[in-house]
Length: 169
Image 1 (cartoon, one colour):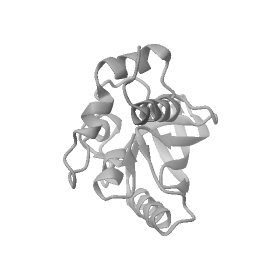
Image 2 (spheres, rainbow, N blue to C red):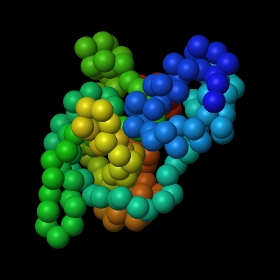
Image 3 (tube, one colour):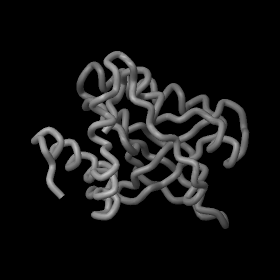
């Protein structure tokens, strides 16, 4: 499989690392023309991430720390009274470093949202090269339960793009 442009190669390398894609999933993204769809996105209009709908690997969570805009420390309920503290990397986004003004603002936004959320649900994808789980995070301000929060709650990954705190990858 050949890529036509050096920027395209960089895009797919970043996507593969950030989302911990297998060779098969990376090939599918290339064949689907994911790079072209991101490039074709109109200026000024944030990219809409495809919201996950498969209910596999869903867990409730409690926030412990916001490391930076796209990295969280959560206590994840694995069921049967088993809680695991885990570092989570938000899937499909990249945010500025927390030492920058933009990164600090994004981190503050995430802290404020998760501090008042009554229900937080994590959908894990897989682990990245740093041992963090790559995940989609959903939350609600009322206690909706895991299924309802996943299907109808706020999608943190997309909100960060919409508000300009993160970029899609």
